[in-house]
Image (tube, rainbow, N blue to C red; front, side, top):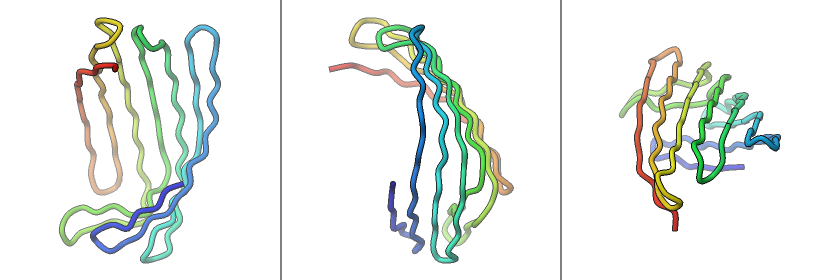
Length: 129
C-alpha cells in the first residue's frame, strides 16, 4: 500500500496487488490492479495494468506495459486539479548492457486523460555496483 499527504491539501491512500508469471525462456508476464482513495471528496478509483518483459539481467531486455482505469486526483497547476477521471498509459522500454556492469536504457510512453495527452521519450545510462 501507499499513503501521501500532498502539498495542495489532498490525501491519497491506496493498495496495489499483482501476480507475475516467470517462464523458462526469459519471459515475464505481470497483471494487477491499483486502488486509490483520495480526499477531499472521498473518491475511490480502480486501475488495471499488464506488462510483458523479455530478456534477463546482463542481456537485452524489452518491456511493454499498459495501464487503464480511473484516477482519483491530479494537480494541473497552482489552482487547478481534476478528480475522478479516466486515463490510459502505454510504455515500451529497452535496456541494453554494454558490459557486465554498465549499459543504457531507452523508453517511450504515451499517457492520456480528458484534460491532456503526453508523450515521453527517455534515455539513461546505468551502472551496477
